[in-house]
Each structure stands twice: as structure tokens, then as C-alpha cells.
Length: 120
Image 1 (spheres, one colour):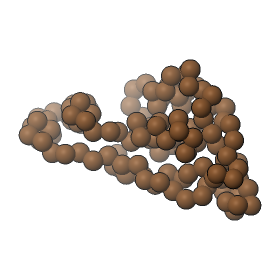
Image 2 (cartoon, one colour):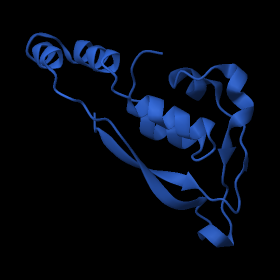
Image 3 (tube, helix red, strand yellow):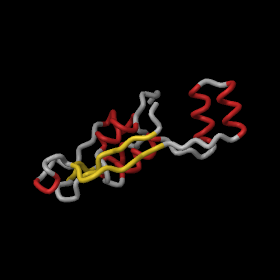
Image 4 (cartoon, rainbow, N blue to C red):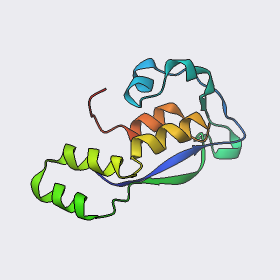
């Protein structure tokens, strides 16, 4: 999995309410009660009809502590990921969900850039 992504930001000139796909919310671990918080940008003359004005980065940074290093040598990828998150690493999925809930990016983009196919 690529540990960094550039995600398109919603255009502030044309952003509006979004109707989220429940599957996307489930995959990103977002409670359905948050459905009214999402925004999306259809495009306008300000953004060149792209729906985006710029990009922001989301990334994972894994500090190789002794325990994480042991897990890399002994464990599988999932065990390393769980140990890293337990040690404080913020996942792409979590960052993408946070940006979508803040209205900075659409839920569709959060799903596209933040969900890597792990079990729901």
C-alpha cells in the first residue's frame, strides 16, 4: 500500500451538501449518524469545472520502534499495521475520513484514496 496520497480538495466556490454512499461510510469506519456532514463540489468556473481547487496530502509515517521492528521480522503485514496503530500511527483511512467529515474532501475521494480493502 502506498503510504502517501495527494487528495483533491473541494472547491470552496461550488461545494455543497453530499448524499453519502453508506458502503463508503462503513468502509471508512464513519457512523451513519454523521451522514449530514459531507460536502462535494460538482465544478464551476472558479475551479475550471473540476470540482477541486488544489490538493492536500495524506500519509502514514511509521516510527520503527523496537516492538515494531520485531513485528516486521516476525509478524505478517496486518500484525505490523495493528501494532503501529496501537503505537499511535494515524492511517490513511483515518486521515481521509477526518478530512471528509470536515468537508475538505468528498466522501467519494476519501474512499478512493483512504480505503485499501481491509475488512469492514
